[in-house]
Each structure stands twice: as C-alpha cells, then as structure tokens.
Image (tube, rainbow, N blue to C red; front, side):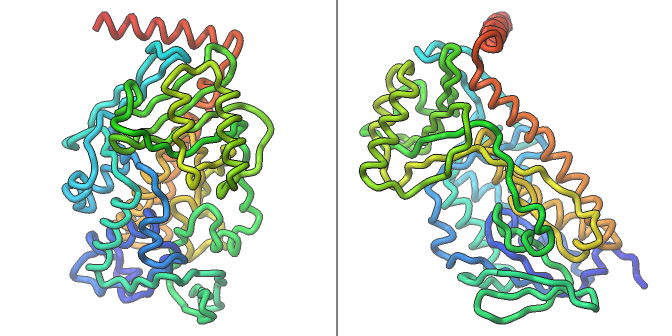
Length: 409
C-alpha cells in the first residue's frame, strides 16, 4: 500500500457539515494543497442556511488578525485571498486601547504585522469575508448544498460514516468534517456528553449603533475598552464603518439568559439598564447607547468550551473544527481567526501525512496549541476589565508604569 501523503483519501468521499469560516477554509485549503498526481476526493458540503442568508445574516465587523503565525490573516494569505480581502476591508494597526470612565488614556496593546503581511489586522465585515469565501468555493469542484443541514450521523460496520440530511436522505462518507458551530449536531451524535458550555462569570448587554456623521474620537478607529475606576464595569467598543459601532457593557454576576429580538419595551429597558450600570462613563457613551439599532440589541452571557483532541476511537472518521470543537467567550474576538486556521491546518495535515491517524494527531497539536493561550487570556481579560478593590489598584499602577515606559521609548 502506498504511503504517499494524502493517498489515504484519494478518490474517497468527504462530507463537510457546515458552511461558515471553518468549513469553507477547509474546502479551499484542500483544493489548493491537494497533490495533483493523486485522484481528488469528492467533497460535499451541507449548510443549514440558504446561500444568501448565510452571507448576510450577521452585521458585524471582524478583525482578521495577522500579528502572529496563528492569525486568520495568515490563513487568508495561504489561501491566496489576501488581495481580495484587503480590497474589501481596511488595513488596521490592531491596536487595543484602554480608557478610563472620563476618557483618560490608560494603556494600549500595539501589535506588529507578522512576516510580510501588510498589517497587523484587516477589518472586514463578516458579510464581505463570507462572500469572498463562498464565491471562491463555488469555483472548486466541491458540491455545495445550501439550505440543507446534517442533522445526525452514525458509524457503519465498515467504518464509513452515514450522515442524515434535513431533507430525509442519507449520505455515506469516508471522512466527516464537523464545522457546524457551537450547537453542533455532529457533536451531539459523537460526543453527547460534551454539549454543555461553561459560564465564564460575566455578561454583556449591548448592540450596534449608527451615529449621524463620523464616529467621535477616541472610538472612531481602534478596538476600545473603557473601564470604570474600580466599580467592576467595562464597555467594549468596536467601530465598523465611519458612522457605525458595536458596544457592549459588561459586568460580573450570575449567568443571565441570552436574548435577542427585543420588543419596544424590552429594548428601552435594556438601554436604561446600560446607562444606569455604566453611569460613570462620560460621553460619547450615552450618545452611543441611545443610537442603538433595536434589531441588534442583545444580552450575551460569556459562554465557553475548551477544545478537545480526537483521541477517542469513537471519533475515528470524524473531525471537529471551529466552534464545533471549541468556543471562546465574547471577550476574545478571535473566533473567526481560529476557524480559518483550523480549516487550513486540517487540510494541510491531510496533505502532508501518510495516514488519517497521523494527520489528525498533527492537526490536534496545532489546534490545541493555538487555542489554549487565547482561552487563558480571555479569562485574564475578564479579570482585568472588571477589576475592583486592590486588583483595580494593581492594574491602575501597572498601566501607569507602562505609560511611562512608552513615553521613554
């Protein structure tokens, strides 16, 4: 039997469950990396949403990071899509700036671009990035089924995976790539005891606001964290376009029920709660809250789930990528970055290794090593943003020392 890398999937059938960033990245990467001397595998994708809704359903801005080898921008470059993404996005420094409740500059993180990337971050709407990936995938030989979900799956006696589709049909495959998100149907089938997410201790309320004219400084360009002076309240600002910004007031406390789709009374109550909770925050905070678009309002508890390895024999022939494998709290805006890298890494390890077991083991090493530090840092960020008492004083004086160092250099 040949041990040529990738040979174990030559002429085989791969089903990709889910058509978001992780699934599409895998499809495009395998198409790009596959050894042309080998028979190509048949790749079939099933996505619950129809094509157009899958592109436009979330109105958020993404920061595709390029300040380390684990950034999503590295995957975009490897996929050959960097120019197209930059054309529809904005090159950004990737700075994270921390301000006091009275808008005194406290600290900042100033990453630099990795390798030959054009910027530390490219800011692009989720819609534009998704459209680029979909249109590129449509140029491959992959069969894309929109409006059809993989609802369940099982392993057959011969080792193949049988997938049940939402239209009532079944499809068999040699490899199932589960990229069907945080509530993964495939995880419910193969890891039924691993469906629970953990509450990280903080809850955000917020939405997206559109202001007349340009966004005011200092929230007009960079990711911003505004902190109270020891009261344990923070607000995250993420500007979209010249007049649009996402905001989220965050507090520590018991877990609240996630919610969107507010009626008019609930929406007004949410804004009132935000203004009362963060009453110490000076303008433009109130202006931003009052300009919230009702359809974008949310209550969002910070939920998370640690990444898992594919060591269990019950997972043979099934690989989980993106949010189907791991979930980060909203305090780390890197979910799309992890998904893009997961898709690329899985395809690359398939094409580099001479067996599926070796490819999966290599993929796990990359994926876990990438996820672990950002998972830990999300907890540090929650502790930092909601600091009170002595912890707040520790951070306050630490940031003052950092400012002095920056002024010296």
